[in-house]
Amino acid sequence: MAKGILPGFAKVFKLFMFNIEMKETQEVELKKSLSDIDAIMQTIVAFANTGGGSLYLGVDDKGNTVGIDIGNNTIENIATRISREIKPPITPKIRMEKKDEKEIVVIEIKESLTKPHFYRNIGYKRVGKSNIQLEPQGIENLIKERSIFSFEDEKTLATIDDVDL
Figure 1 (cartoon, rainbow, N blue to C red):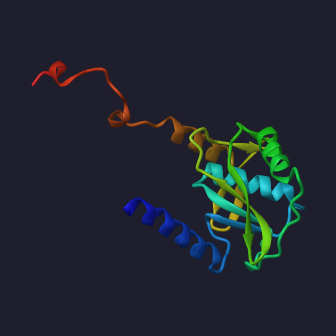
Figure 2 (cartoon, helix red, strand yellow):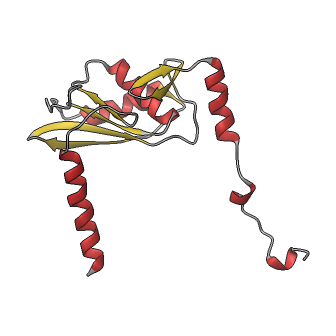
């Protein structure tokens, strides 16, 4: 019984959160259309390089749902463009949703483990509501971040019997 309650609650909570006022933040970008594809690609790279985030296409800068014309291949075309033009490639979740009775596209990007990522050979990071071009030092820092590991996270084949006490 409890298993059925939690997924239902999660769905209601998601709908509630989706219907509150939307605004741009460190993790949220709003675009009214696909017309500025360069800015969309830069945002995807910035989210992957920084902390992840969600991009809403069909929502204007003030959070008003304007909707977007979604053709038969819209989602596939976006996914193809992302995989071809962002290096190294990333795989965001892309889906259509209805908001205020209008169709929008939501692109969810997780922070990448293989950063830095580049669009047209330029890296970006997210700072507040802006995408900032990475300087060489910023690129170097992202490379260092991904190479840092913790010995506590490393797996071992040793057992407790192998430890000298």
